[in-house]
Image (tube, rainbow, N blue to C red; front, side):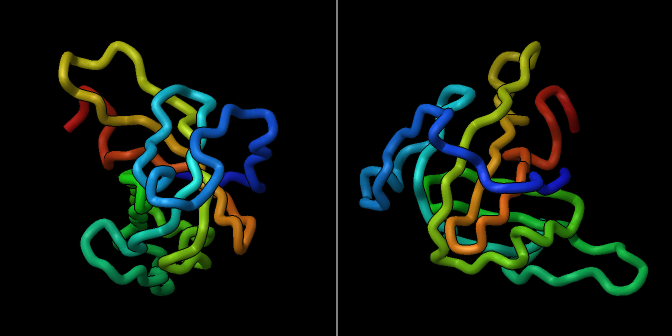
Length: 135
């Protein structure tokens, strides 16, 4: 997935949980256009807890990020905006897409745009390596 070009303007969205208290940490945006304030819990690759920039050939292990509220993002690509982030950074994460036509019980493929409030970098990642109905 490609990183978003700039920060999300939360004023145009419905924001669930403006603070960073424990109640807000538990909230996951449920409807497209809703957002939640949380913090980064883990940054790594698809396979490890350490994010490593790919070598000269550009082939790497991708990127993954866990937020304290339970939102997970993953990419086969190295995402520079995530790499500039740190565990504990405050973020605003917004649900931007829920796939349709998925098999019953397969809820993979939700897309979240997350903005790091320290760096003002944003990224958009799905919650699974495969979309619903995929591998």
